[in-house]
Length: 383
Image (cartoon, rainbow, N blue to C red):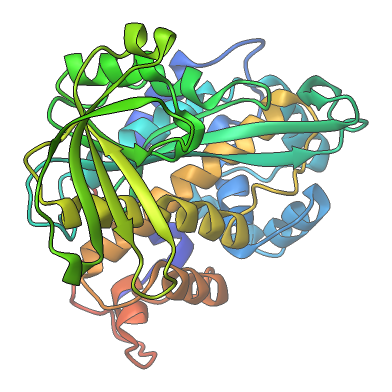
């Protein structure tokens, strides 16, 4: 009879242990470990993310019930104090670097976006994670409120968070946006919270296209009008330039203004872009697709643990968030590799219920009945 490891063990094998240890050595500070390790920390917190554990006690008790299987995971048994101390002291930068490695490996197998053009398409947004100021005094946001921000540039090819960073709640969205190196020729969908005319000029100079909504009080001059198909909800398609004293200095270029009325709600939108080649309806659809980044934030907050934290220091909070993002990439990789018509949430629910079951991962996802024989579909491997 063929041996089959636990589902959790098969998931962890998707990560190169050699690469992980190299990153752990690179991002180590303080004294060396005796029995604990960064891998043990990662195993513990990954299990917490995938199984929905809410506290240090909950995590340790759950792992204690699986002590006989920790050896096969390459992990040592941690106490609450050990896990808490590692979360507080050992740099979270390890998991930020691991996230980048995992994204590179997912990138080669992602499906394309739903549009016919070949340009990379991104949606850029930020989500505030509220924190209690008395418990997290380092996260001061307002006089009586604490918060941090998760900024994400979502690549619509595979809906992966290609650009991700976590900042203090006070950091402006545009400040982070300016630091992101979008590839040449890409299209970025943004809302009006990223309104910055000098940034629009910078994107245009770098041959990066943007799609956003025009502010209602913007002073403009119409230079050219093009015919539109009103049957598709289009109202206007114009070439404009800014006429405001400061605006014209910050953004002295011609842009495109598109008027659109949603046929379902009847609401009118005015879009602004520096792309003159795509059809006006395509520009409207690109902005509508920006909602995908909002759905990403909703999914990760509902299904992974980034709202309630098991540590109170900044390092512990950041460690938990970056491990959650790593788990999202692992789930996405499993979805791409399996080529099954299952949602990320369906995959996560299956894993939660069977995390320490000794079954083949692919057979579980396919819905095959349990069998004593090792499935011959092959293991998932990150190449």
